[in-house]
Amino acid sequence: MTNGKNIYLPVNGKIEEIIPQGRDVSLFRVRTQMPLNYVPGQFFMVSVWGAGEVPISVTSLFGADKAVELCIRRAGFVTETIHSLKAGDPLWLRGPYGNGFPLEISKNRDAVVVAGGIGMAPLRPLIEWFMKKPEDVGRVTLLYGAKTPEDIVFRDEMEDWKERGIKVLLTVDRADECWKGHVGLVTGLWQEVHSDLKKATAYICGPEVMIKAAMGELFLFGMPEERIITTLEAHMKCGVGKCGHCYTGPRYICTDGPVFSYREIKDISIP
Ligand SMILES: Cc1cc2nc3c(=O)[nH]c(=O)nc-3n(C[C@H](O)[C@H](O)[C@H](O)COP(=O)(O)OP(=O)(O)OC[C@H]3O[C@@H](n4cnc5c(N)ncnc54)[C@H](O)[C@@H]3O)c2cc1C
Ligand code: FES
Image (cartoon, rainbow, N blue to C red; front, top):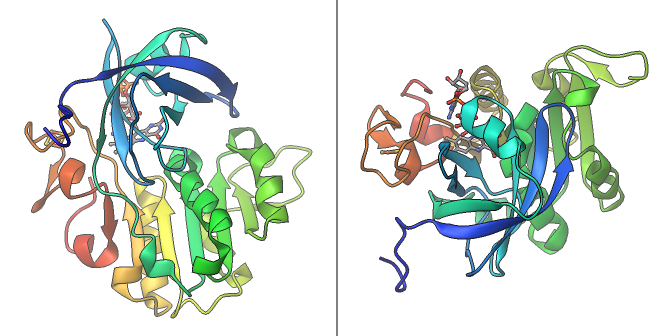
């Protein structure tokens, strides 16, 4: 129990709005009966009665009010079931769990945000935080890679991010006839980042192979280990350090993470 609230008990939420975000992904705006008090980088165990429970990152900035946004990709049974719901349907939330992104380490420094696919979901509130507190960060560059242009999430919002000073660099694995931008790996965009990477901070989320490549390359460019930050995924059941499903090396991803620095995880194999 913390602050009188039993952290193991799910709270009842109601889906207010569902906004499609490219292929197989939708943003679910959920309203609850009590304040949720989350920070960027944390996650909820999200459940539908009769279907099951899955860990999903918060996609909105701070949860002092009674709402949260969740960006969910159809991956299997539970996420398919969530996608079959409509506005007004219930969704249950347990949490928030895990640590959050260290926001203070980017104070007076440039920040490089590196995302792949649905990995943009936990990083969106970070971008919102930087836009809200421009005095707390230097230049912000977002490097985002998706499989195809159709798979880019938050594409409409990115225009607003650009207008508000975020440098947005996009790339896709496979272009379509309308795509005029980069094609290739997100780590092929480093030369377009005009920050001194030795002095900057990086926040990374995406497929395992992308995380490993991005962390290793930033380290070689001279970025200190403790300022290369990522958020990891694992198969989770409890979310609170009890079941052992997310145990990797000496750490539980659910309680020690899911946010880690390169220093903390460089010697363990990413699940
Ligand atoms: C801390 C955390 C935050 C997450 N945040 C988000 C988010 O914001 N949005 C989102 O769409 N998804 C997120 N995920 C992933 C999401 O939890 C899984 O996609 C979901 O659990 C799949 O459940 P399912 O029943 O739909 O599919 P299943 O049938 O359980 O799985 C479908 C496929 O996905 C694989 N899979 C399932 N869970 C994971 C996992 N955790 N890591 C890697 N592969 C997995 C399975 O091996 C299988 O191949 C997050 C996971 C974690 C651990
Ligand atoms: S999910 Fe159960 S210990 Fe981490």
